[in-house]
Image (cartoon, rainbow, N blue to C red; front, side, top):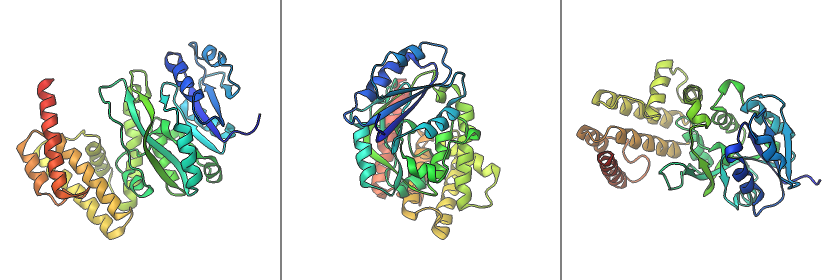
Amino acid sequence: MATPAVTVLMPVYNGARFLAGAMESVLGQTFGDFELLAINDGSSDQTAEILASSRDPRVRIVENGRNLGLIASLNKGLDLARGDYIARMDQDDICHPRRLAVQATFMRNRPEIGVVGAWYRPIGTGWVRAVRLPTSHEDICSWLPFHNPIAHPTAFLRRKVFVANRLYYDPSCLHAEDYDLWSRAARVTSLGNIPKALLRYRVHLDQITTQHGSAQSENAKLVRGRELARLLPGITPGEIDFHHKLVTSNFTPDPSTFSRVESWLLRLHQENQRASAFPRASFDRAIGKVWLRASLDCMPHAWAYSRFAGSPLTGLSGNRIASLAGFGARALKRVMSDKAA
């Protein structure tokens, strides 16, 4: 078999429930020059039978024999991949038919990019709009101290960059291994996101985010702290913890805490204006978005709108008047939703 242009890397563990649909969405791609590298990680359900039932020669099955875990399977897949590019795929998601075509074309036209993701649409929730993530390398780097900027199952990697820089998933960052990997990859290559919904991301009770939310949160906090330390070398564990609670909407919505939120974000803004640890304009946009979200988390209290309207942070993510109008509209929508519930 000729070497494929793309390896679609899909570890599977007890994935029988949604596996057939996930495989069908890959095998039905308009771009055909790929292998589907399915790593069966010691499944005890019908996963092996579903994988073996495919007669498509592009399907390549590797059996771990026993359960090694997701990170070990992903790293094994990075070593076994034959394609110039590696496209991540989860066992329960659905690819847009043109996902591989769009991402392969993007990478061929942008040789400086080592990782490109895409926007996505959730399945299994009431949310129907595409989840939009930052698209430029500057905006992605500036988003790293706050949130994971690339959705893992949309990621499309340039294999030679990962081989040359020994970029593997870190077992110590369990359940936040992708966030950690993008943080490290951003030091040696450019990252991007395609502003199109190229994946339908399934939300259900069996997924990692649901089952291992606590461990995922703690390891994500470590990544955030590492990124913040680039800007604040003397940052304390208490400050990292407060920042983590802020960006995950787990802070107490009272006037005192909200005042601390504003002071903290102003400090980040001012320090980056001085040190330029992150691209200034992009970092300010990220701070502005976090400030807007934190302000909405404090609604419907009148003091929240008053503080938001008078803060120098308001408008950092764009036009100040537009920010005020957007805040009012979203706050009203949230209040109406709460009343309906």
